[in-house]
Structure formats: structure tokens, C-alpha cells
Image (cartoon, rainbow, N blue to C red; front, side, top):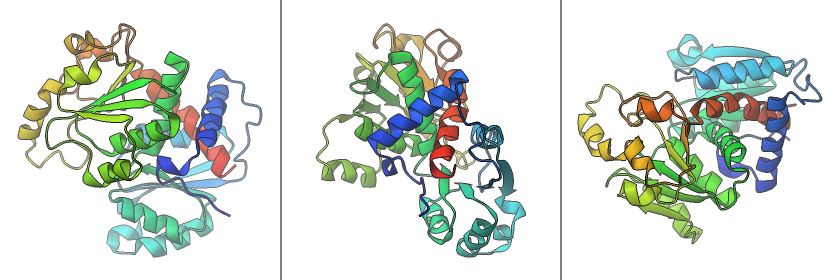
Length: 302
């Protein structure tokens, strides 16, 4: 029976730990079977532009012996009005697995509903679970564990934030989210936390309070993909106090690790001195997309 990966919540704690262990083996070069995708073709169906997601998946599939095929939505019949359901039905007859990068999560869910091959979320407007797998590996590399780690996310609550919330719930991370009023996690996510009666995630409007005793501090761009031309200066002004800079990090633990899922707008959400400094694990984090996604592909499709 095929299995999809649309949100982080679909993985158990044991499965996440297995993926991270396998990813660490890939990174160390101790890979064992290097042909777990031999003879398999994996489609990358992208409606949004991409650097890290596309390249890390293509390279990872190739390294596992598979054949990646990139399909830009605008060059397909979807761009001329063909339905997602028909597209999924057809592509899943050609491919052993599909990575879909799209806008609305409901489009991804519809794709998965009609696909007979496993579907992996390469990003949607509300979830980015593959990114968070890499984040967890990076935290574990730097801190040696996940359980009890104090992670603070600063900025606009977005798809990465939602996946971080789910990962924190699953893995026992103590998560704080610092956003200006009006930019906190969306009501649907807050309702999920309320329904679970979960108290381990705290929401702040004060960035200094949020980073106190933080082991890891994380940010993302303030203006999400597709929103760049909609007059966002007011949003940027509201988010300025939430920039990760040297002054803010003085309130965190002395050995704090800094994460950013990239691309970064240097000088906005993070300064050059931080992203290029000794506390930054940003480029290890980017590399870890390759290793964790190889482990995920092996689990779902290999």
C-alpha cells in the first residue's frame, strides 16, 4: 500500500529517529545499499520555483540509483487547465513516486488522493515537512539530542512554522514562537494545539523574552514566495524588531545555534554577521536536505 508524506504529523517518533539515523549514515558515507532506487523513476512536479528542494531531491534520487524527472507545472497541461486529479492519475502510472511543490495544501492532498504512487510534499503554503527533517538532523548534530531542546522561531508564522510545531510536538522539543501581533500561527494550528491540550509551545510578541535560554534560534524570510509584489513595507516594519542579530543573540544561551531555511534576505530577517558567524549552522542545514530526503525516499519508495 502506497504511503504519502504531506505533513510532518504523518511520521511517528520512531520513524523520524530512523530517518535521522539513516541520514547521518548517508552524510558519513556509510551508506550500505547505494541503489535502493535502482530502476525507479521519480517525478518532481513543481508549481513554485526552487533551488534547494529541486536540486537536493534530484541529486539524492540520482545517488540512490534512480532517475529524477523535473516537470514545471507551467510547461504541462495543468498550465492549460487540465485538472490535478487527471494529472495525478497519469503521472503516477509513469513514476514510482512524486514530489509535488505547490500553493494550497488542498491541491497537494488532491494530487495524493488520485495518485497511485507515493506523494511527497516539496512545499505548500501551509507545510514544509522535508525542510524540518533537515532542521532536526542539524539540531541533533549540534546539540546531540532533540528531546528538551529549547527552540525559538522568530518572524512571520508560515509553512515552516507549522511544520516546526508538528515536529516539536512529535519529538519533545520546547518551542517558542515570537511574532508581532497579527503574525502569530494561524487559528487552525492554534486550534490543533488547543485540542491536544499541549502547553509546550509558547507564543510571544517580545523577541527578547522569546530567545531567553534558547538552544536554537530560527528564522525565515519575512515575505513568502509569491507575495513579493503586494506592497509589504508595513509587514517589514512590524517584523524589524524580530531580526536575528548579534544584540538579540546575547539574550540566548552562549552556545546558541542559528538556523535559517534559505533563501535569506540578508539585512532583513538576519544579519550578515550572524548568518556567516560561528553560531550559524545554516549551510549545514541546507546540506542536510540532501541526506534526510534520501532517507525519506528510501523509506517510502526504496
